[in-house]
Amino acid sequence: MRAPCYALLDDALETLAPYGIELRNGNSNHAPMVAEALCALGRPDAVMAWIARYRERMLPRPATDIGICRENWRAALGERARFTDWSAFFGEELREGPWREVLDRWMKRLTPGFCAAATHGVIRVGHAVRGLAAGETPHRLRELADAFASWAATYQELPTHGQAANGTMTPREAITHVALVPPHRRSYAGNITASLAMLDDLPEFGPSIGLIDTGGDLAPLMSEITEVFTRVYLANAHDIRTTIAFIHGVTSPAALGNIAPQVSDRIARAALRYAWQSGCALYACFGGASAMAENIKPREADEDETVDRAIAHGDEHVIKFTEACLRRHAISPSPVYFAAVDHVLGVIPRR
Image (tube, rainbow, N blue to C red):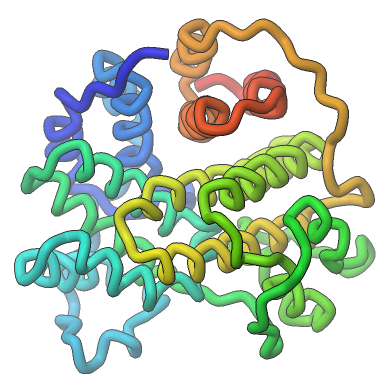
C-alpha cells in the first residue's frame, strides 16, 4: 500500500467548508472523512474528482443561531440544527489552546455519546485528528472544529443502567453475552440512530458496557475489538441496511485508533469502553444468532488493487471501510479484513 500523502487535503477541506453535516437525503455528509481516507491511502489524486461527484448531494451549513459558551454547552448537546454554532464554539476552543489539549478535554466529555449519529461524530474526529497529526494547518484545525461540532450536535447516549465496573472477559468472549433485541420487537422505521432507540426497552443490554476487561495493554485490546466487530460484520451483514450498520462497528474503533495516540491513556481507555458498547448496540439491534464469523480462509491480496477497486466503486462507505480494514490489517494482520472488503464491494451499489 502506498505511503500517506496529504498534499491536497487542505484544498479539499477548503472546497468542503461551506457544507453542513447532512446530505439531501438526510444521511450524514461523509465528504471530509473520505477526503482524508484517500490521502491516508496515498491517493490524493482521487480526492477532488470524488468530491466533484459527491458535491450535489451535500447541503449548505445552516446559519448561526445563538452562540454556545462554556457555561451552557451541555444544554446544546444533541441539537442538530446548531452545528454551525458548535463549530464556532470549537473554533474558539482551538484558538485558545493546543489542539491535543482540546482533544483530550472534549474526548472525555463526549465519549459517553460515542454512538452519536451512528458513530459518525467520533469517526469524523478520528479522520480530522489523523490529518492534523500529519501536519497542523488552519484548514485542518477548522475541520477538527467541524468534526467535534458534528459529534456534539448529534450527541446521543446508550443505556448503561449503572453498569460501570470493569469486566473480566476478552471481547471475543464477551460478544456472545450481549443481549439481542428479539426479532418480533425490532422496528427499523428510520435510520441507524433511530433504530438504537430500541435499546431503551431492553434493560438486559445495559451490562454490555461492563463485560470486557480494559485493564491490559491498550493497543492489542483495540486490535481485538476491531477484529471482533469485523467478524460480527461478516456473520451478520446480509443486505444494504445491515451492511451499512455493521460497517460502523468497524470504522468507529478504527477511528479511535487514530485518536488514542494523541490523548492520555485514561481518556483512550474510557473511549474504548464506549466504542465497545456502540459496536454491541449495533449487534443487539441488527444481529442474529451467530455473533462472529469463524474460520476465514486467507487469500492472496494486492493492497493497491484493493484500493483501486474501492475508488472505482465510489461509495463513501466502501472507501472508508476499505481504508479502515487495510490499516487495521497492517497493524494486526487477519484474513477477516480482506474478506470484509470483498463482501462490501459486492453488496453496496456502485456510485
